Amino acid sequence: MSADAAMLAVEDLHVRFGDVHAVRGVSFAVGGGESFGIVGESGSGKTTVLRAVAGLYDEWTGTIRVAGRVVGKSRDRAFRKLAQMVFQDPYGSLHPRHTVDRVLAEPLAIHGQGDAEARIEASLQAVGLGPEFRFRYPHQLSGGQRQRVAIARALILEPRVMLLDEPTSSLDVSVQAEILNLLSRLRAERGLTYILVTHNLAVVAHLCGRLVVMNQGRIVEAMTVEQLRARAPREAYTRQLLRASMGYDREAARGLETFD
Image (cartoon, rainbow, N blue to C red):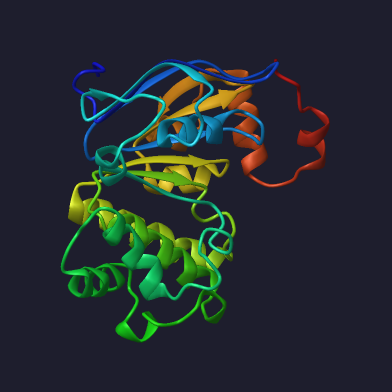
């Protein structure tokens, strides 16, 4: 897919924090309505890529295009309306002293959007929360309910791109499935483009069609989910990641290699 035709295109992205070269020459393109995964172990650079795309870091070089438009290091309101991020920790991403109503009303006020009452109710309904949740505080919600509120906050501006940073990793296993099914439904209903960062290959297999595997700040392999399910990666690092995702095995652990 060409960068010009993609909903999101990243070309030769480098991110440095002082002497640490965290992301090294990463490039990929994601089509409109596609769900695309970035996977790797902790420290691989996957979340750094997502945060650079979201405009949360400015120590990067390369080119980032969203909807055909090159974006700079400082992002305007048009970008924030086009692309929204859902963070890993639903306990940390919501203000503890703000009600759900205020959490959802704030982006509408910032962007000068009217009809707040209807938009808030519609966003809550979209994520499976009734009107009784509107004036609750985060401490009155379960982890899954908090993440639903975070997704509702991202949806309320009607973005075209959702940046998902490990959206289920802080949740119980039973709740993870509910959130993944919710995200799948929302993408199908709204034609959303997802970029999902995770270390969990099962999550990628459930939600994505294509993925890249990162290690030491670089993309080591690009593959389809069909190849992932068939356990047919080309690279030794990806094969090791697959084995690790199947659970702890003493013999397999003894054979783990370090890839630089």
